[in-house]
Image (cartoon, rainbow, N blue to C red):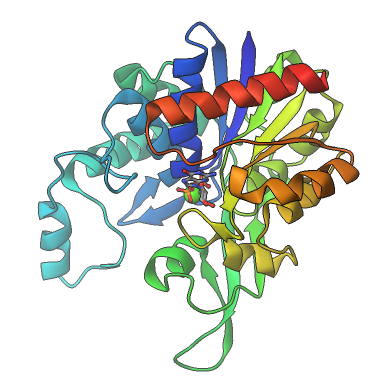
Length: 319
Ligand code: GDP
Ligand code: CA
């Protein structure tokens, strides 16, 4: 069975572990969000691709959900001693090596998709991990600066990590997306899929950014395979993180039903909501999307695999 998953970082990566456990012999292609990518200290950092690669490859810091296990921060401390920032982005020594290899290969002329494949040779994530695009896309967020009262635009990482999403997001723009092309293999994987999944990833800055690359939304909408999503919003709030802030920026309420309507029946055949949101089922179905309420908390691998099985069952039912 060929499964395509449009994934952000932590939510996507954790779900993928459950999917692998539920369907061990599936051929899984992950289309990863690269709108979170940032250049730091001269290095290209791809937080969401790395979270998927480290999580599935056994190198992730499990408590944090991002970055490497058994990490140290000597390089960062030495940079700080030179007064070289930013100090708000956590880059550990082990993680630095990944970004050095990536930057070196990009500098030698390899596209990001080839670099990602080379990095995955080490980690063996058990999925084919494709960046959504080889072209540079960077999500920016418009805010009113709390210090100066002026309107300005910041990189998504500055909004999320440094400002902890505390100012309202007035707009979210995937800069460069309009000119970007899907990476090699992306459209082919979508067209050949037996199932397409939107994991519980951020609907705006993860899945939304991937869909903003021209051709990808159209390919998902035109795919023969059923498309099933799992709500990242449970009980009217994101399970972790600050998705409510970026949802508000695109005028979407932070409810499981509103996110389903935001994707719409053009994209989604099925949508899973948490059992605590069972009263959303009727509203989602009224929008033309098959819906079930099942436990959606990825507390452990067994619970996450059960979520993946529910997604497969809903796909089967909506086929
Ligand atoms: P990021 O790039 O690291 O922010 O990760 P993603 O975009 O892949 O996923 C973030 C989303 O995952 C957030 O909106 C969370 O609400 C959601 N999430 C995290 N853990 C869980 C969980 O256990 N269950 C559900 N349903 N959603 C979750
Ligand atoms: Ca992310």
